[in-house]
Image (cartoon, rainbow over all chains, first blue to last red; front, side):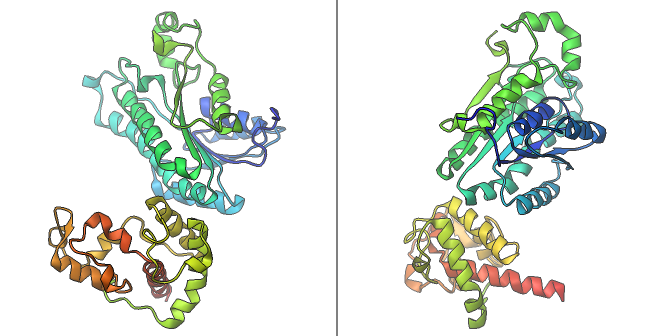
Length: 252
Length: 143
């Protein structure tokens, strides 16, 4: 097996690719030869930075402004990519938001926004992509979940609910699509050093770190490497799994 | 789609492409696809195959087809409560269904007919009518 070009000629779509874990996934997959289109909602200059960082990698990286809360936009963007490339081999649902607060102080918008992006957004991407995979009789779907989906955390009822939903969806979809050789897995990061987790890390850095068995926060690349595993033929016999990439955080 | 009848010209224009798309989706020979064969009982189609078939037809004919709405459409003007009772198609529902699925041979409508078994009645012609109906609608809107 060639470990330098695990994804040569694969057509990949990544949501939430302009920053953080999503960006790292885009770059890691492009470094393995994949042709990657990533979606971003609002951070135009960060999206441009991701494209620039990918220059010189063996795969091509393109950015597309798509709001995944809008099913019609998702369908249009997916069809455009599939019609140009002739297929979509791998979908990575990485876009996600947090609106942390204790439940009593959470607004309706905090609940709706998180569910709209983290859950409905995933459905909005899956529905147009899956038919392309079914007709090719192969495909990989990787949902970025969170340790919060299984391990409770103060101020994260909305986020935890959304990620628990993603885990359940992952398992059901794996059952549905296995007969068509489409593998569906989730990667559940712990506390990763990104802008999104900044407030959590600042609020209680030492307390949180003390509960991570490996004694450090994760890096986006720690997550991206596991996504690469699920995206490539290294995981040909794995489906319906939620793999925690959390330095042992869930165990404590 | 009550009493919707395609012309023989429309059928002969669409059928060869439809047969090819269905054979690819179901992994069978094109010659297995006849207008009246039962997709589930004779060709082992599953619900995921119907999605595959509809998707291929949409691409082949550049039309939008209803997904997962065939049964809902087949009720026509009847309310759900008039069409079925505890999962069984009522006699009024059966009249409506036979009219909607006018291409299906009458002896395939067993009674009692469960709503869950309606897809067993679907034939290539059922989908052919959906395509032709969508083509006609598309023509109307572009006029």
